[in-house]
Amino acid sequence: MSTQEVSRRRAWVMAARPQTLPAGAAPVIVGVGLAIGFDTFAVLPALGALAGALLIQIGTNFANDYYDAVRGTDTAEREGFTRVTAGGLIAPEEVKRAMYATFALAIGVGTYLVYVGGVPILVIGLASVASGLAYTGGPYPFGYYGLGDLFVFVFFGVVAVTGTYYVQAAALAGVGSFPLWIPPGTLPLAAVVASLPIAGLSTCILVVNNIRDLETDRQAGKRTLAVLMGYQWSRIEFLALVGMAYVIPFALLADARFGLGVLLPIVTLPYAIGVSRTVLTESSGEALNPALERVGKLLAGYAVSFALGLAL
Image 1 (cartoon, rainbow, N blue to C red):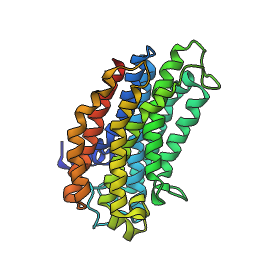
Image 2: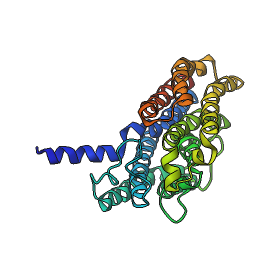
Image 3: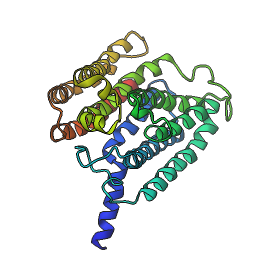
Image 4: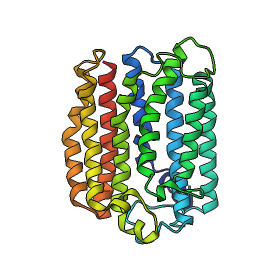
């Protein structure tokens, strides 16, 4: 195996950004935990939801790598992880083809989920893929206009958790294939509430990323929410999202179906406090790149402990 082959393989791994995959897996883990707790766990829909979520995450990463490069946003001054298109490691057209191929695979997986979940899954599936493309691409890339945080909160949080729960519940509801609307009892309010901590912590990954890139994004004309709000309010946003993640489990205790197990994520609070100290005091890539990875680990640890608590 030649050095060129090894470096090329590594370049594709870098483009896929595996360190971001907890953001794709975490909502599915929580949706499965809730389904187990509510006796609606179904293996095939759960696996389909996981595969679809990870493919959409990777496709979005390819899209960001490609579009940020061709728009001139990724410059030599950027302090984040290496982007393969801007860095010349992979040709732009190859990254673009990989982006479309990954989203096509996501749609292929989604075909089964649409068969189970019907029109609601068709709508949110197509919306998820379209949003992944439009995050940095298209005529109005909403990641460039302060809407990226909302996109992550909705699609990698609320939609992903509730969608994972819904396809399992719909598979067991006995309503047949391709329901035209949400069958009764397949999307409880508890699923929406349980999605909020994951939505918040997933968004925290983007907040840290945007705080780190605030100055270079401003110079490139990329108006992220961090650019629009500045360091202080971006850090307040980060704290509010983290705080919400640790308040929601207590709110779930108001539902008699849940026991003290839902408080299990509190074990990750010391780790969250440590990461928050870095985000509140640092702005350099040298400090925030490790913090970005730590927020991903926090999300993963929170999701696993929360899912276990919900299942209990």
